[in-house]
Length: 155
Image (cartoon, rainbow, N blue to C red):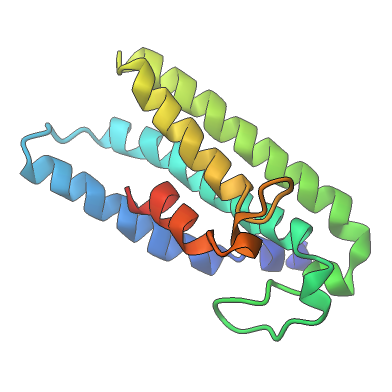
């Protein structure tokens, strides 16, 4: 269980949450009505997609992580390098979290009667996170990692 938590790299959720919170606060300053349920529901969409990226990145980078130097920000968790028996679980968790995010996004869009484009925007963010290291796009390996992160999280 300890290795699953290390694989999740929960410390990356904090800056993601702060970015999400900042966006919500900017929306309130712009005139959007405060709604705690909508805030939490929205974060479930973003947070589960963000957590999925921790598992998928470690899974798709597991071979290159053998040669990388682990830092606080890069090099992966090294869990799959040291425990290859967890590879299948990491991939399953990544997919489960990604699908949870997509389904939550669909319900959010319907419940709050948002435009279909809201759903597409969330879907695009989820897939940019997935294809950061996943084939066939492997955005980070093509010099597009920062751009995909900016698009998926920054906006």
